[in-house]
Figure 1 (cartoon, one colour):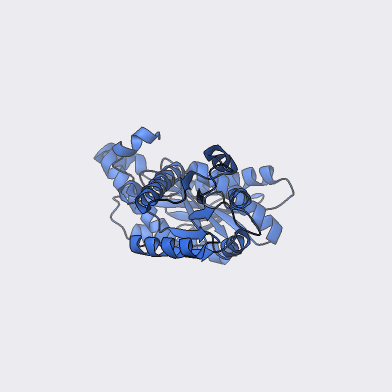
Figure 2: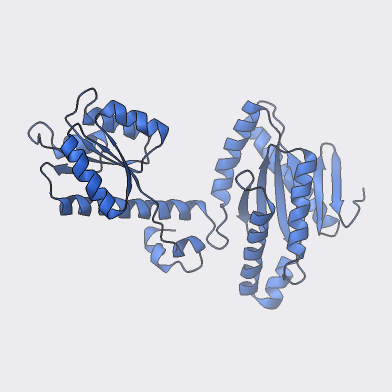
Length: 326
């Protein structure tokens, strides 16, 4: 989706949100009068903020809790503003920085922007100028956040998309390998979905996909499992730090909760595979996806409305309403 498409998107839930994150500002200046002035100014605008009187103190505060925007003086003891800006840009690249200085002959706009700041104000400054520059930074942050969200989310269901699946699965398998905890992948396919679309149209199909997305989110562990729209009517769930019994209960909960919804004759086929670390991460990821996919198709071949756990060298173990033959 290109930037011009943002105003035309009518189906993505995230597009109807304000995309205005809460701002956490940090003011850095060795002049107590400037700190007091900006503190009163930001309080009046309703922003959360902290203050620091030099760059070292600012770094310490950022390590405790990052800021969304830093407003910093340039000439300060211990660590000057240019060095602070470079440190922030390297360690907290999502933080926006506004620089301010009265030493305009020593530091140019180009110097400050090259260091990593996104704007510059000369002391003494007017508060309306500061407000205008701050509001521009906040608007641009909102726009970047929206673009970032749209690039990571499926526009119909608001679940993470296939690109994010590939990215997060690699990170999760690396973490599971390093920390040696079990990791499972659930592959999910809608049974009878084509018939639903053919009989009732794609609008009804979209409604069912949204229902499934809601069921998946409600049936998995919050802030632990991650749900994706893999493509078309296929969905996936990454399930870390769970044993086979736990992942079975999660899959069965998804299957059962979906059956309680008003989705016509559709049901779910779910395939489960466990990540096995051999030291070749790319090969192991591909095998995990393939085995989850094979287990899902075994569930479909059994008649659907079933959960199959992949077993190495065997067709699988089926849970649900039917027994798996063969």
